[in-house]
Image (cartoon, rainbow, N blue to C red; front, side, top):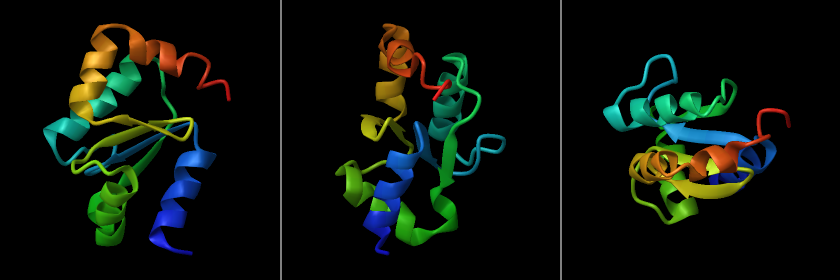
Length: 106
């Protein structure tokens, strides 16, 4: 399976996926830490977190998959949402909460 196929499978089989640096309990950059805080503030306690620092292939592959140059990257129901700045903006205007409504129940 190619790295692109693996990424596609991950984002389609998990309702919420965060590609980040580090883990939710030990983020390795401020942007990843902010992304985790935002997801949790929306009431999502279980989500797939992929540490891109563990695998250089995934780190590069996710950038190519999304055509987005930075990490973290959030996917909801298979759809690329954006990085921490976009997540912050969506959270502040209430859109991210709407996107995540009912996701935890899936």
